[in-house]
Image 1 (tube, rainbow, N blue to C red):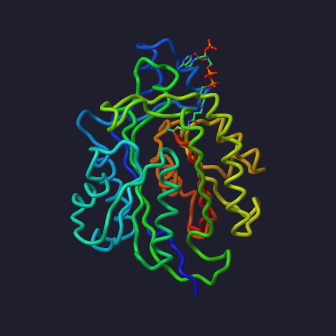
Image 2 (spheres, helix red, strand yellow):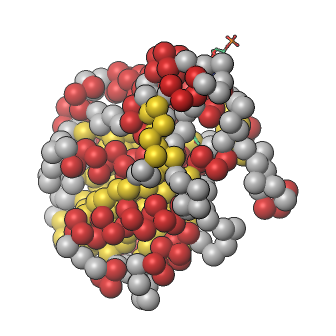
Length: 323
Ligand code: ACO
């Protein structure tokens, strides 16, 4: 018998305020047409004043618990992947834990920028497979609107706020690729590329800072590295591209999503795309896309799903799972 980390429930939350591209036209030298054609983004959600990352995360967590038919008392560990926590400490995860009324178990944050959710899934898998936890909730939650430079048209039009949560639980498998649950994981980072995408402030520099990005360079790395990491998880699990039901990529740019699918030889019919409605929500983008994909009746039990992401660091990776 093999222990597998299997999906028990999923949910998401998006802040009420929807900002269409046109709203930027009034403040910046930009256009709906430029944003759409260069990124695929049509609108994004922004958190209300005073609404924090743990607010969004808690709502997503409650939606995932309802989907799973569980309560917070059933969760052993809570991981929040975020680069925009409410406070320097304690972690956003412990804030969510308190708001869920969860007094047992343990909670912590993971910071791997846009790859944070994939890193979180990998960590949850390790906790479950090693027997340290039976049920783990992994949340990706961000308020990137707080770190955008509203005068920098090359970045501020690309990002949004939101949260998604996935509950994984220990289940039995037969050590074959037909098992439900996480079948393969691949993680990477390379700090020599840290200047391509970063926030120019932080705790030990005494400022919050703003997001800075060499978009063209990040783009160049993205397609190459995302296709490679997706191929690696397929090889590890002995899966061919034809067997994959859904690719659920990090939602940064439709051209990166198209380019990666093409490199993998997969038709866009097998790709979940939400970037038009959410923009780039960093660590929240994959659980948001998984949740939307499931609620639209696309992702179903037994489907083979690959998630892949790249972000600041650079940090990147992929997880292959059977839903
Ligand atoms: N409106 C109008 N013009 C603009 C805008 C805008 N909002 N932003 C930039 N431009 C201009 C530029 O100034 C430039 O003008 P110039 O030629 O006169 O200098 C021109 O448009 C072209 O700019 P490029 O940067 O070359 O445009 P590109 O086609 O590369 O698209 C983009 C830019 C969308 C940022 C793209 O490079 C991209 O998506 N990169 C990857 C981003 C990404 O994947 N991030 C993922 C990780 S995010 C994370 O980890 C937090």
